[in-house]
Image 1: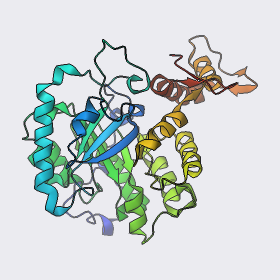
Image 2 (image 1 turned 180 degrees about the vertical axis):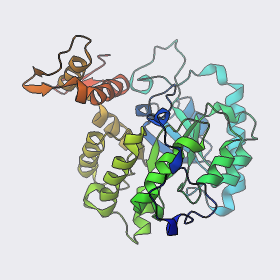
Image 3 (image 1 turned 60 degrees about the vertical axis):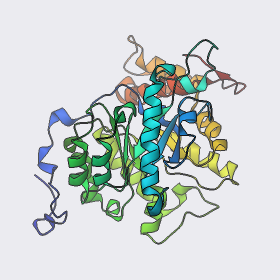
Image 4 (image 1 turned 30 degrees about the vertical axis):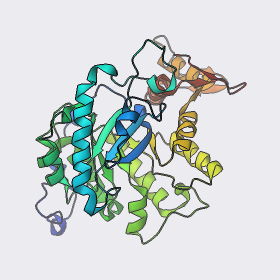
Amino acid sequence: MSDIPKNQSNRYGHTQSYAHLITERHAMVRPHTHHPYQLGASLYMPATRQDIWQVIKRDKLPTINSIIICLEDAVGHSDVELALERLQDLLNTWAEHVDTINQPCKRASLESQPPAQLPTRPLVFVRPRSPAMLQQLADYAHIDLIDGFVLPKVDMYSLSNWRLACQNISSTQLLMPTLETAALFDPRHNQELAIGFKEAFNQPVFALRIGGNDLFAALRLRRPKNSIVYDTPIGTLAYQLLGCFVPHGFYLTAPVFEYLDQPTLFMQELTRDVSLGLVGKTVIHPNQIALVQQAYCVSLSTLDEAQAILHSEAKAVFKYNNTMLEPATHRAWATEIVNRAEVFGTIDDSNSEYRARL
C-alpha cells in the first residue's frame, strides 16, 4: 500500500499509482543485452544534422560510445518536420547498408579495428519530443534499427502517457527516461516513480538520465561556471536520486558539463561521477570524449581487488592490498568494477599506461 497520505493520493491526475505492486520479483530490473556502462560518452545530435550516418559508421567521431538523435530541445519548433524527414532518410540509408557495420559490443569504441574488420557502431538512441511523437516514430520504416529511445521529462504526471506510447515500439528496444522536472524534488514522488518504471514498460529501462540543466531551471538557476555540479543544489538532488533509484536496480547517468574552457573542473566532476557509480556522461564536444573514457578506466589494483572478491574460493573476510575485503558486502561493487573494466579497460597504477587487460 502506498505511504502517501490520502489527501495526496490524486496528485498525479490520471496517472496510475504503482506503489501497491511491489513484489519480490521486482527486486532487480530485467537484464538486457548491453551493459549501461557502454553508454560511456553520449553525444546529443540534432536530428536535422546530415552527418549522423557518418558517425554511426564511424567515419566521424570514431571513439564515441553512444549517440542520441534529438528531436526535442536541440530542434526548434519550425524545424521539427525537417528533423523527422531526415531521421527517416537516415533510417533508410542505414537499412541499405546494415551489413556494413557490426552491432555495438564491449570495448569496441576504445580499440583499433583491423583493416579487414567491419566497424562496430556506437549505441544509437532517439529522443522524441513527446509521447505523441514516439507513437508517430513507431510507424517509421526501419525504426527497429535503433537501440532505443530517450524519454524526456518523465515523472508520475507523464508516466501513463509514455507507457501508452511505448506499447507501439519493440519490446527489445531500450528506454532511458530522463529525470528533469520539478516533481523530482519530492522524495515521495520519486519512490512512486521508481516502482512505476518497473511496472509501466514492456521494454527494459536501460538507464535513467539526470537532466541537470532542466533541474537547475526548475530552481531558476544555471550551473555555476566554477563549481562541479555536486557543490550545487542539483548535486544534493543527485545523491537523493541515487539513493532512491539504485536500490530498485536502476543505473543513472551523469549531468552534462557545458563549459569547454574548464577541463580541470570537468575531470574533477568526472571523478565524482565515477565514484558514485553513474554509468555515463553526456558530452557536448568531441574533445570531452577521451576525458570521459579516461575517467572510467579502472586501475589495475582496483580490478585485482574486485576479482579477489569475486573469486569462487574467497574467504568470508580477508586482507588484500592492506584492505579488508568482505565478499558478502562488496560483491555488488566488485561486479560493477569488472563490468566497467570490460568496457573501458584498465590503467596501470604505477605509470598510468592504458592497458587492454580483459
